[in-house]
Image (tube, rainbow, N blue to C red; front, side, top):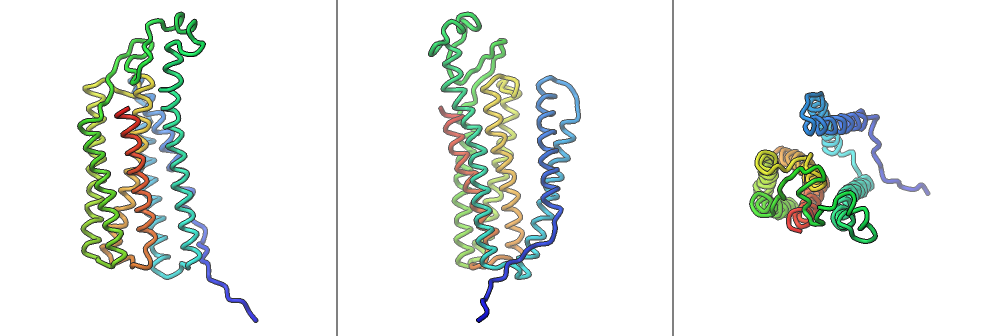
Length: 292
């Protein structure tokens, strides 16, 4: 008796993973050089590399998503492939969790270990008295060894507003997901559109926060360990919000074209997972970076 096998679609060779690697390379080189240029107040090519990286990234996302959409709408996917996609998305989010854990770990090390040690804790009293006798072991560290002073970013104001915005966006995203499962298309379009709009508002307000930090507070990437950890954590999170907003925008455009059904909408679900992950990271970031 012959066995029945479930079909499993294997796509043809694709240029998109290679283009994704090129985009990430350009982003890394561009961002690194741009930071050096800003801190040293000199001109360079960092901004051009960074711009090229973003253009390449968005072109890659557009092309890869287009291929995926065509394959899905053509009925090439099976239940087994759907399980593979779910596993892949779960591992991707896990890798993102570990990515942010590394930066939160750096923040923890600086606050709990390095700063007290520089203040003479443990067996470091002799070094403290010789190297930096005027050092105060407090956090945020708003003065560097060379005398550069800055201010700590408070939690009230724009950070609190952005926190409320992201929390609301997580609720609206969930409402949109439930509407899709119930095949309520009008409700789905409304709440998903609101979610995309809230993501854009968050990014605009974060830019405004950065402008305020640089121009009025003296809080820059060149203002010691506090400025470094602040911009690294909030900046990378802002990049993830940007990517999440782009994903949800694509899902919104697909919804307008009539894509997705209550039984077949993992692309939407994956975007929802990612958005909720971004929201959880921000809540942790708001607590550990802004409040504590």
